[in-house]
Length: 297
Image 1: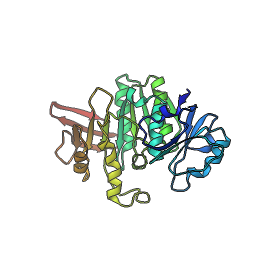
Image 2: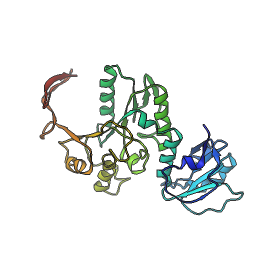
Image 3: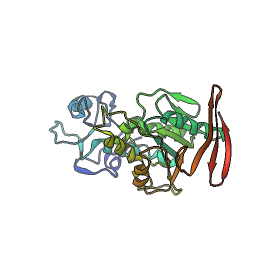
Image 4: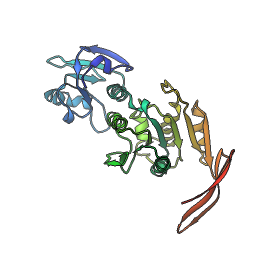
């Protein structure tokens, strides 16, 4: 769907611009995927720099660029210089697809372990109630009964917004999404309006990407710090936190929305008691302020 470049940049901090009245057909961060009329978003990565592929994008029909540095291009094309092209792409993608997360109930699950299990359990419960659901995660993405292949736990922001838009078209009501620390740190989820943030746990991992455990936790906290900010949806949002984990207190303190705690060993709003594991599955009692009930798996 054609859109004017400057409308695509709504909400983006632009530090310099040229030719923003240009009508464009879409955007991409991979020069090899550029189609005629597209905007090429130049992202500086850890292995290469998108600015090095500007000429390739132009040769494929790009009519505009989003850059972080001054460039000298002939012939002149529409250009928007921004402070952070990753964040810009997330906002532009949301604008292009008309903010699909605002039309869904979006549940983000983060933590070192248990993201995949938790998203699938949430999905199973809601699907069991008859809801049309979706999953974005490590094993596959799911739109209703359709399963789609994945390249990474949380897609790039452009791909993520596209998937959410497809879910809207397919009448999906609720989406359970794995939110990895990489995705949160790299702002792939920046333009997503979450209704629930779930924290499972934090153990040593991904220190090849994060400098230390504090930075790793800080990336996880981004999901909870963003809950409720610049919210368009009228319904409330909240956080669900595993109170047994040592990082729980920092997670709870960083968010401004109501927190529901869960756990086994620590005092929590929702507790699993009388937990029993055997070769056939598990059983436990869910205890909360309004009563309790038994669960068998």
